[in-house]
Structure formats: structure tokens, C-alpha cells
Length: 119
Image 1 (cartoon, rainbow, N blue to C red):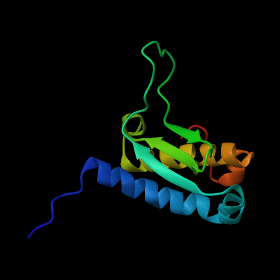
Image 2 (cartoon, one colour):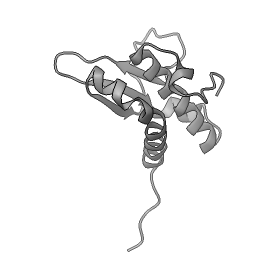
Image 3 (spheres, rainbow, N blue to C red):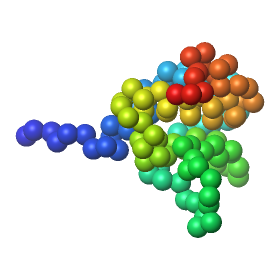
């Protein structure tokens, strides 16, 4: 039986896995000292009806009450801002670097020396 093509969500998950593997690997010891960290993908952020700012591309949820730290990437906003798979990979990499930097209390270019704020 022939396998169906990957869904957009599966393709996005593959990009996230590749980026996360590359970006957070050098930081495993630092991250372990902070406790557990998990990554998640959601389609869209939940925003209040009166939201008038840019739609976020990701979010950091700090650990609390037995829950791990969590970096959430929002698939549709990231895809909408990307014209190609390469653009998507660069944008996901930028967002992951920014959120890891926030968690670790450092700068994104420390997390990822190839960090490009304009990606």
C-alpha cells in the first residue's frame, strides 16, 4: 500500500524537530538544570477578542506546579509568514532561539550564533 503524502502538520512537525535538535543540543546541561522542557506545536494561539497586536509566533510557558517549562510554536502564523520551506526553517529557528534565550536569561545570538532577527 502506498503511503499518503505527509500532511501540512506533519511537514511542519518535521521542521520543528530538525530545528530543535540543532538549536537546543548545545544547551542540554543548562536546560536540565532548570528542569524539564517540552516543545509543543499548536495551530493558532488563543487570543482575546480585543487583541490588536501582531499574532505571536510562539510562546514560553514557565514551569509551575509540577508542569515542565514549555515552548509552544504556532504553526499557522509561522507558515503564513514564510514563502518557502527554507524561510519556514529560518523563522522557526529564530523563534526557538528567542524563546530559549528568554528561558535561559541570555540573548538569542548566544543560543544560536547564526541568529538573524530579520529572518
